Length: 591
Ligand SMILES: [Ca+2]
Ligand SMILES: [Ca+2]
Ligand SMILES: [Ca+2]
Image (cartoon, rainbow, N blue to C red; front, side):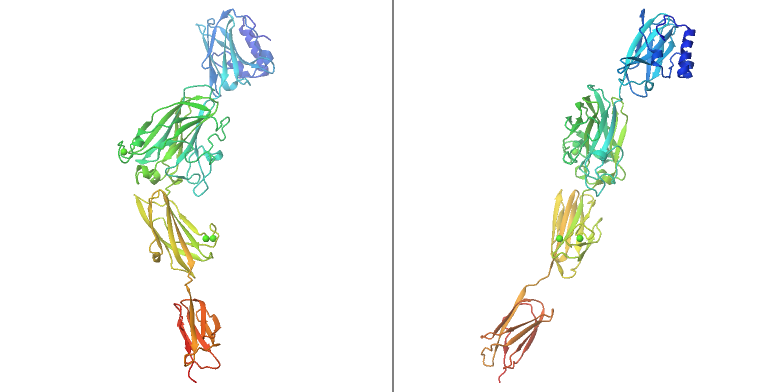
């Protein structure tokens, strides 16, 4: 049945048409059909409503509010050049590749006003087509005036901000990839950064028309909170979590490739350069670590200067706008947020001292209407990076525990066991993290308790790493103490070494003679170590000499001589052996 082909549609005809439509579909369309600017929300039988060729006896104009629509939008249709108060038939068609013909998706009638103009609307969601392209046609029932236009389906361009959660405190550093890209806030259960490192961020830019130019995104970050510096400037996304560590901003983004990107230098922020006093070119100035914005799948064509709202003395927010060309439908913009350090801003001016979440990166706005997003990072996830590590090395390795006492806030007494298995339930080392040096420095000490068992403390050695300005003092060893003046950013590692006391072995020697000084051979000499109970026996040689070597010094000894042919004036001598004895002689009595 041809609808549009009728040269003059009467009300009766139209009702007849709609009656047949209603039988198949919806009374809803019937009720609305006489209303201008309303939509027939039914689905039409294609054969019934197939649009046939128009006889273009007059030209009319048909336009829409936009050429492309996203789901949820309303298509507004403007018609002009029709007759006054004319009944105009509207149809939305799409070309069906399978059927090789245009299919009417929707059809309804509107009335023009006195000027021959009408406005109609249709929800874009009610249209469906594999091709995503639609033709809208309108013909006046009396004048045959005809107009048509096309619209297409477009995907909404969007921006979505993620931050890298690199694993909770105490966990290994996890790469910024997969589920580690977090579309929300993060605390120390998910991330652990160190002041001075750069948190990785990415903004997924999706739904772009390839080739579109002049797109902008504005990103921002909280530079100060209560006058303390948080994320102080921007750096490259891979400054701390490198590509080699598995940092992958493209992770999970369709069409994004790590090999396809452009970069743009991040401008130097003069407020950062000026340092805490905000006076340029003096002693507290800061050198900003250079970095780049990286856009995967697109071309960065420009970067604005910085805009700061608020004051460095209180709360402040800094923003910057990046302009780009879309080389792909989906792109990823990535960068890093540098965590302000006490070294740069002053010992009391870093946001590591602020409870809560002073570290904020945000998506402030986009040319394509991405909406504001903010990603917070808790101060609990930012390590102060001043720590002391104590290691026990004992020889031999046994289950013996060594006790330590400490001074300094953040340290507490502990014991270590060097049984040869180091990182188990009986560790040989302990780490005190997050020590707060305070303004400039702070003093700590670790003392090994008095020697236990047969061990003695044989050495203390300390190594300073990272910043390297901490100092240690371990002398004299008899104090059994490592004294540490800890500076922020440093790791101080002290090793307490224990060994077994084995005093130098010594010898006891002498000879046996008769009353005339003549040597007595074959005299039995017995030496007993009363300390450990060991006994050795020797016989004098032809010169009357005897000798015992390798006797532990410091022990108490009893030496006894016996010869069946002699009686010795003193056949037993006892003493504490501290040094070698070479003349422990025995003289036989006159007979
Ligand atoms: Ca300055
Ligand atoms: Ca060991
Ligand atoms: Ca162990």
